[in-house]
Image (tube, rainbow, N blue to C red; front, side, top):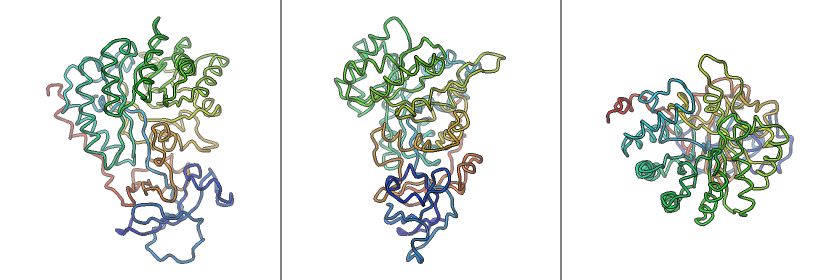
Length: 437
């Protein structure tokens, strides 16, 4: 479908207006329903050379691919994953599906992790992501004790081998109490050395204010961005997000902070959550929600139907001007036995779980430009003249079509060239599933 030439046109493309930087000063007559624009896109030498309203040109002097109104997205950004835990399910199933048993299952399995095991499972996840159309991934890496040596080293190798195809960022994952110890300081130094992000798991305990204060100070000292797991529960008294925001404001922290999950915000009284959201906005914190994984984990009780969805207050946060992203989180591991590292599936299920529809407005940014901005990638996850032609082409012409089928026949362009979108075979990992490697 895509010509083997460095200069061609994509004709009759529906592009979300909010993902086209230059569309903001274009005449509104170009917009069709759902804030999509019908345009022709010129691709030259791997980049976007022109974006023009359809029917501007009567003749094209280079090959033309008629998309017949099909939607075009920029390549995706998946900013909260756990590649090091991925694809463990057959070896380490969590049969109750609860969060507590997920922690224990991982703790036991991690005793046998080595660099090869972790690397191969991580790379499998990246292969899936790449084939689905993702350009940038941030992964949390279990880093407690001796694990850091294994996961950080496997990550370094992966990042280097995939550098020409996928932007990879690493976040350490430990309990925040670790940052009160010399070992935590050493971990922060390792993260700084590899250009990573400081992260950890914040949960309510008598020392939580001290732990958050110290963690943010350590990040400030090393000019590290922060990406924290907070309030992944349905306890209204879990207010780590609020404490992080207050601490960041008190310390006048300059680094970017991202908080993931923030589930308990959704079960707090409205006056409380509204106050917290205002603090989050003031502290310039970005929020990433993990709807698939939290739907799976939260409110899980044997033989009982779950009563709540586990997602944070996405609409309220966004209306307050807080940047909100959505991401894959765990795939086929003890915290979520499903998932295929497909950002479109994340967007599709999130639209249904969290009502990101009618109007769709600019929710498509939650899996593209917003996470890219939070990751410090200003040219990724958007479509504009001069940017690399890293695009995902769908036959679907509207959101109602895009979100109703799997879109497994999508075309992924990297530097204007169609890549092989064949997914890796699960059998590649069969020798790792026995638990004796």
